[in-house]
Length: 255
Ligand code: WAQ
Ligand code: MG
Ligand code: MG
Ligand code: MG
Image 1 (cartoon, rainbow, N blue to C red):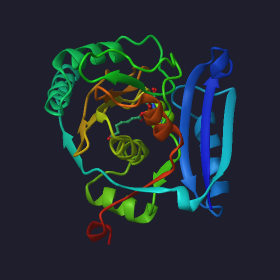
Image 2 (spheres, helix red, strand yellow):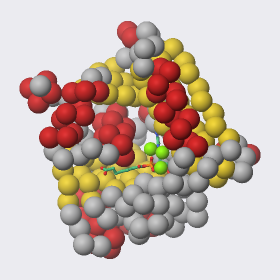
Image 3 (cartoon, rainbow, N blue to C red):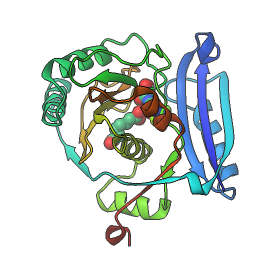
Image 4 (cartoon, rainbow, N blue to C red):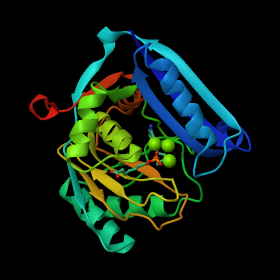
């Protein structure tokens, strides 16, 4: 038995009552880990760089181990860029290489860059036309019920590549789950944490970080999942939100 632990925090009021999204997190942990993981989430909601939450929803649900799907971890690449403009150009090129139509890429970057406030989840966008496919508004689709299978092995694997921050730790897990879904061509993401300017493009082959995808200080971030034509959206949304997934690093690299 595992426990799905999910947290969402907002300021002013609950999300569904128009509150500003502050922070969210999702883990899939053992009973032994549950108290410390839940405490860490509460702390994160209370001391976030986006502000102090006054609404926090913490949900704990059991998940049967036999329902958990194993998914491999994506390899990580980093591209150092001198400016946000250069970063977005490189990210655009990577998305086009992955098979997203240039017009769809342009529309998506404009949509993320033009957000007036951050969504709580991701937008699903047609990889050919750039049209938004989900009708979830500011809620978007929140990917959940995923974690790393062996946390120590994962942290060692990241450390050997010079990565140690929580943003990467979580984003690579999320992207690995998302890229394992049939019909997802690529993902574009940058953080809504004002101080975190590195973003990424993920494809089913590679997670590529770009060291500047938004201006320092901006509290606007988001995620776009580019979807292949003809994909069953209901099935995809169901997988992203509800399918329990544990990510594993390659065995030979884990030791
Ligand atoms: N499911 C779907 N969308 C999400 C989720 C989720 N579980 N969590 C966050 N988002 C969306 C939401 O719109 C947020 O506003 C936005 O993504 C950014 O979330 O390699 O920290 O948690 O150095 O602020 C990427 C680079 C960091 C990491 C991403 O995102 C690296 C990050 P944040
Ligand atoms: Mg967050
Ligand atoms: Mg996050
Ligand atoms: Mg954030």
